[in-house]
Image 1 (cartoon, rainbow, N blue to C red):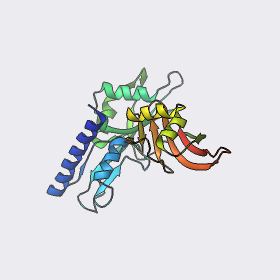
Image 2: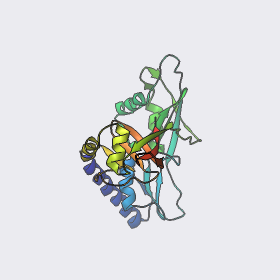
Image 3: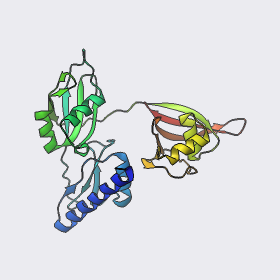
Image 4: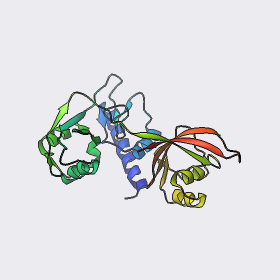
Length: 246
């Protein structure tokens, strides 16, 4: 299934949930959506009034769309699971956790953000799925684990670093070329191939101008936040700064 078709399937499901909520005067919510799906959803279902986006903590990457019964409705079934781990002899990675979840044949939309720290694993999911995982997710790679629901909702900390670049203009193809260390023509080809996103939406026009704080995702290169122009060179080229996720 293509990304476009996948996103349209999500929108169809959201329309159905909204209609159910309005018709039956009830609380409805989606599964966890990735950032691209959220970007598409927000254009049709902007947050506010009777619509909320929740992922368990404010900076969550994966979030549910919640259609509220009324403005007094504050129900949210997202819980945080934690497993304490001894990783002195076996390090667990994000891929290991995902593999264990997939082994249980769990739908990707049934869980939100998860990450591994030095001695623990955190995972956000629904209350019902949380009970299932506590009972069934007992081993990750070769490490025995025991998950429990906790009252706290910790936030994932993302590491970043500032980088600088020199570009001819703030056009998307010039920015992508600088970040991917390639030519403008190669950057345009990457854009045509659908490998570049601005604010989690696939970029179509190479001449689109990048604004401050826009998120630029380049498949195979990484994710960057454009911080803006810092100056000009003697040849009147633009010096710019980015925040790179590492």
